[in-house]
Image 1 (tube, rainbow, N blue to C red):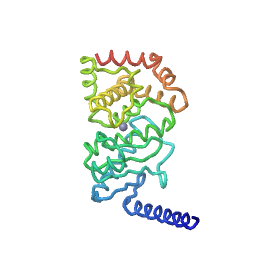
Image 2 (image 1 turned 60 degrees about the horizontal axis):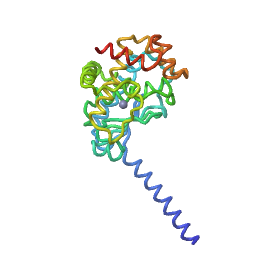
Image 3 (image 1 turned 60 degrees about the vertical axis):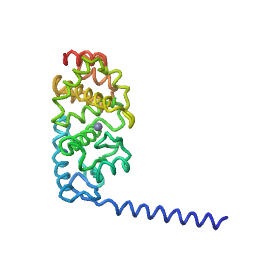
Image 4 (image 1 turned 180 degrees about the horizontal axis):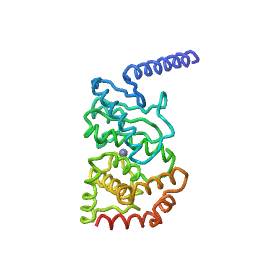
Length: 259
Ligand SMILES: [Zn+2]
């Protein structure tokens, strides 16, 4: 029996070792100032372009949100971008929903995506980096509704900033509109319908656009600073915007602005 256990233990450690070795061999890495890009079959000139674009966004998004940077991403603290070969590879290996073209793990600085993702450079990259930079500032553990995380990330996709209000207006007319109180409880899963996912993102982007562009970036910065200091979501909203005591007040003002 003991021999059997010993044999199993040896076999297990050999398997672990070889899996690690395999995992290490599989991903090639390219290191830049603030990023490490991991890839397998993607051509190197593509990887170089990813790294250059990510470096530009690193500064642009921080400025865009009005944040000042007290931590610089360097050495082991660099963000990691995993470039899967294609959509199937991404869905299977990164275990993502078919509708997703990129993702981050909350609390980490890891981005997973693939080269043919729709709008790779203009949407996926700034969106996922937006998530990381926003959370790094307000705190990875700070309790914020998902729509705010997604709205801030979508605000970094310049092309999408302007079209979303139209989508939300249509939802108001069709009575498919989701008020903020309900939006705050929504969770997106692999089985969420495309229409539900699209409306969720459109509303999230529209609220954040309203909070920044209509109400002023200065107030938005104050909102984020309050969140960072440990105030609750509604306390931070009230402190920064004065007239919004809670999400229902915000919902009313946003809907009026859309109409
Ligand atoms: Zn997102």
